Amino acid sequence: MPFSTSAPRLLGGRLSLDFVNAAPSSAALSWAHLIHFLESARIVSAERGAQLLGLSPSDPRAAEALLLKARRLGSALHKVFAAMLRKQRIAEEWTEPVNEILRITEGHDELVARDGVWKIEFIAREGGLDWLLAAVARSAAEIIAEGLARAFGFVPIRTVACSSTTIRARAAAVGVRWPFAAIAAK
Image 1 (cartoon, rainbow, N blue to C red):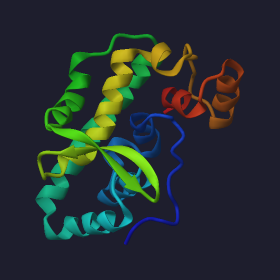
Image 2: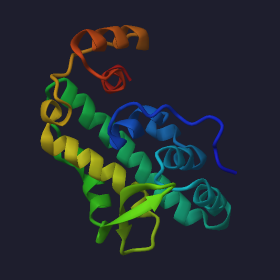
Image 3: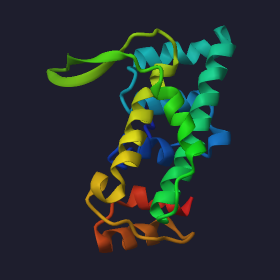
């Protein structure tokens, strides 16, 4: 059954930031939560989400393999974004989960009309499940390659562990989208 009643708030402005902010800790990410995110981010439809939820019992190895990749990606992105916020070096091994997913993205972009609105969607050549994470990985790669200031048009603030209200106030004072600033407080 799709998670249509309680969609996570996707406020980061970039898919990879939403993935990091909306997911519980990487170790606690469940199959259902991953599918919920994919539906909320409109990577899959509610119908496809329902099919994917049924995959866990019917093909547990495929579901577990994708879930493991999603957990690795989430953990790596948290480290990368936290380092970027702190103006620290990004370790090469943190980018490997991103690159691993990007390697499968052979395919092409295509214009698709949905509900009268045109969107560019990536059409994967492969039929495996890894493509479900490709848009998140691409979003992260763009942020890493562009750097924070160019990707978002601001210089990030440093934060310490504090409440989301404090982070929102600090972020608003310098014009930063608060969900991105919240990464540093996780």
